Length: 308
Image (cartoon, rainbow, N blue to C red; front, side, top):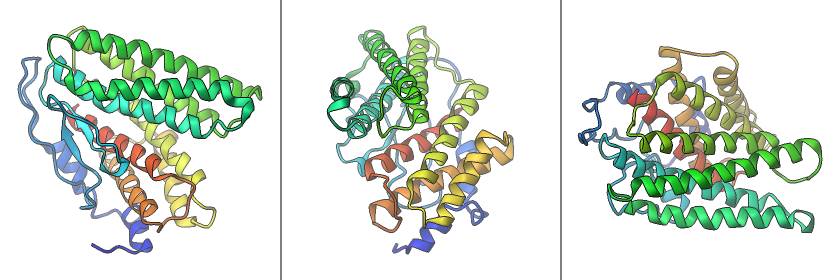
């Protein structure tokens, strides 16, 4: 389907979304697996939420799964069954790659000789999480606690690095190209990743809806704020759409059916934004790898919302 730039903006827009909420409703209404940790297979994930872009793919994290190298081809991995092993494999496949990309982004945004030491640290994290991501598909009943513990330790170390960098950027001790909020945002994701793996190691897989809504509202709201600052100043409609979602998620405290509607709008913004950036239809300084990164997180948000 050939879409022009105006179509892309409309599809991802806040106003022109009346016909797009069916996707989230389908997610929420999908058959839920039985409770417990008995390894009951999860029902097949839903298809595209609204647009058949080929980008918003949910994939079950089966044994031997590998994350593709090209950002546009990367899926959002979810658990294959309701047990700590399956959830551990999916969480490691997804978040180790996300952590690797955080480090990759930092490397590009820490230029010059003055930031060489900080950049080397980011390169180290990038290499380590890339290795962890490659090994995540091998997680099984025999090794999941050990590999989870390894990921927990490294995620916490990376979170400490991010929090230190946030404070140094805020205080003017370093002058990087990273928003202090982006350091804070990515540290929160690392902390949440470590907490979920610790939960799996204790034999629990359940999601708490209040925590899911709080975590992803902050995450998606901040994504929308970043988008509004990283697209070209002439992209007035897209900037307004992103700011409206930021306000809805971070300040208005939407809930109930309205929250589901906003969640669908968030996914649409991320999916169509990635496509528009990839095809050069949206002017921005957002690299396609970052567009893919936030799209996968948006799809993960809706998947977790469906499971609660």
